[in-house]
Length: 359
Image (cartoon, rainbow, N blue to C red; front, side):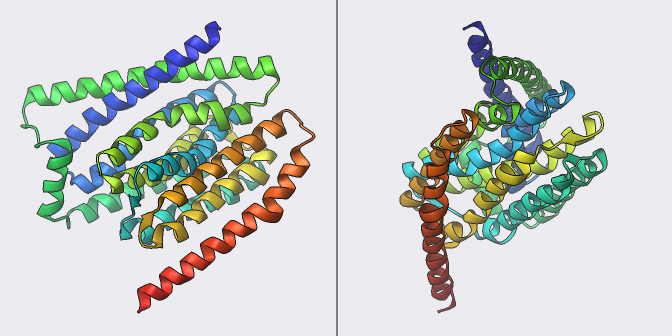
């Protein structure tokens, strides 16, 4: 009971820390002249992924590679299937052309890259540095692109977040205090969550990977949940989608990259993750493309489909962890009927959208 309370406190610290970090960093970004688009794609999306970074680094340093890898992979699956699913159920989500043409293909590409780099069972510090260089390059690219942003987008930012603050020493001090407090809460929250997850895993005999894929992944994704749902409720439907895609890119390039760099000897990637969970992450990323460009919206039924698949994925993890006799029947139903039917549906929708776009 005490362990669950400490884990709940850890989750609260993570959410509060991410909120403080995003608020302080986004305000500072606007003070130094970074465009609203870059603030949304980097500071906000990366800030909501800060819990994943804190938890994965802490887990790697504690020798819990399964939680570190499972946290990133599970969070990316959770972000797309659960967060976009529940947000689309609230209101159909708008998808910008830039996401379809640039960011989603990038998310797919780096998901495949993780599988390739980790195929030998380990992400070395050098491979981690390669991934981390990717997030630096991506951020620089966005900053360069931001110079082309129009006044209309700046006005949109002011409508969403308020007028730009005055550039005074007091403003800088206040925002720096938010950043420091946010980082401190993230560090404390990640330690509480990781230690509690490890204790529960050992008590029930569940692997670190499964705990990372479920409890820790969902817990560290709470900032993304709150951000996307609030954005959907406010009618800022593009923010809900951009936050998820940006967070997934950050999780792979920065979280896995930095974790592999600081972990002694690199980050071990289990065979289970390579043969099942990472391919699921890739499949989920691939599923975004046809759904995203069918009218550049995510309809409610598509959101329900995402949610249903997240439930199915979680059920499979539970059946697998408990060595249930239902594993075979469940897997046969999914691979023999549900997945092929969904794939055919998505292909048909994609072809129709492509033909409509050419007319």
